[in-house]
Length: 390
Image (cartoon, rainbow, N blue to C red; front, side):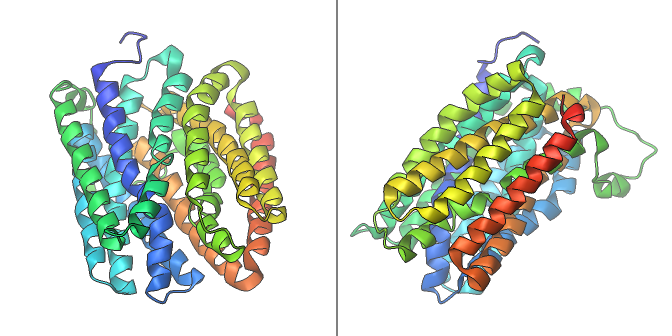
């Protein structure tokens, strides 16, 4: 394996991930508005979002098993197809069907991420794993630059509406699947290189064996970093509406650019300054953002806080991905990266439920303070585990 990152496989992998994440980015501000239009409360919004996370978590052991036994690339492509098809259920305008659609979408999301992370662990050069992880996660997050704003524009356009948003998101996922299928032609040996298996272990025990010690620490830290993320990516549009900010699309553009630029550069920085310090900086920046956002009342203030948060998330997420890539056992790459990839949807689901409940119980300010406290505890955890993070 050469030290070059820019291979055909890596480029096609990033392109497929970009389109898969584009669907998620478009639905981030639209689904809360869709559910509230159907009569749902903030808590119900959290429930709908949690359906996505719950199914994504439950399916990961089986998806990881398929990656090791079948094909990492084909698992990713299948996930994209399933992701695109499931959102079309939202054409039936009921909260229950929105929950069903988002739950099924989570299954596709599990395939997209587990297959993608497994491929990254296979192709990332050993000496440039932090940089490769930053570039990869930067491509994923770059979808949040324009697509949330595009979704809001499409929603309010004279020819638009929720139906147009759902069609557009499905098309992005199907296009990503096409690129993933093209990628499989250039890497016919990847699935076979992972073929070492233990024939004495029943297949059902392999599927339900989910905790992977090698990858547990970066998985826990990634979950901790992202548990407050829905407060910025999903509930911020509801908070902005409450404080009188109407034209909110620029917020998503700026935080998306921040994430895009921050992840590759800060991922490279983690190769130099160490994983422990990078994780600590990530928790600290997110804590500061969640405190400061309670003091702002205009779009500029919201953008500043969102940018600060996404810088912390960029360095933290890139660093934990690099840790996972470094620690993954090549013979169990699919299972171990499945464990790691659970961290985001698990934190997304738990965070959505906590955030939705906190908004109803204590308002948006109380919710942001609660999430800031969670990040402060994460910083303490990172300091206590600094030796292991090195």
